[in-house]
Image (tube, rainbow, N blue to C red):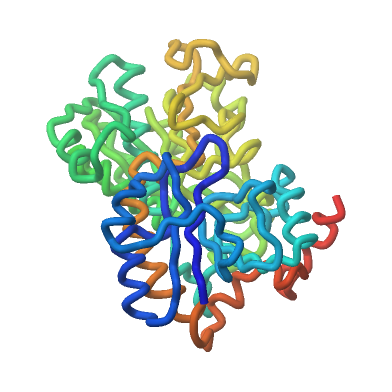
Length: 400
């Protein structure tokens, strides 16, 4: 078995890696007889020399590998036929911009394993960058708030050495008279809360957030039963909400009316209620003027998320009056939006190490041995170019 670590080919290039140099060395020690090579790259957070120093071979042409591992989507021109690929493909939700990628994968008889669908039988994910998206997203939200108000200035996350320096940077931050609401309860939300706590911002319950008019800085986290309610029934049933989100309506407004900043970390189903419409953002009773949309659902639950932003240019302005992008993201009557869609790439070494540890522990054993729990099986979108049964619903998507 020969494994190749791919050079990232999506533009702009992502600096993360699926396995660090030390983890590559660890994999070879755990699986004697396995060969592992790394494609050279000038953009990785771990340099070619770091892989060489760990005793890992660098190889430009990976067409003799059986398994190829990357992070983001592989450029179509770089695909090799009849191989097994592992990467985030962003195809299983029928994303229009990646239809051609999946078409080429089927045409070239490729087996595609998507990291996003590597789950246990209870549907809990075994590898994810979610915590790091939350960490960087909340930090960027605070940075936007400081730039907008002029109260403080934070260095861009990508210019920091890692999480420890970020937390040191936040330790002396003075965020005054600010209320922050956060939606979500998974890895992303907990990563965001980690940063808000590092900045000395106190968490309160949703009830306390609503009833206490003290102007001290605080934040609250909302679960679905806080920001949505059944249209007819008084009680909230979470399982029913997951299966029938169209039976629920927006209950976010009371929190929006108490907030200066909103950090969106929740999973959104297109059938779910919209949380902040254009009309909401026009309402003078809703003071939110900074939105860190970590979930980044375009045309989704937040009207101001009209496009993704980038690590190099993370903020844009949304004009509620026109529904369009504003020239100045920090102008008084516009909403400052942070919607970077590859946030973990701003702390690539920390995020890669965390991801690689989970990959070695939970994915490499079933990938190279016995997949008794079906972890790899459940994440396999195509096998030898054919859609697997769980992803057969993508047939019409493939046909356009």
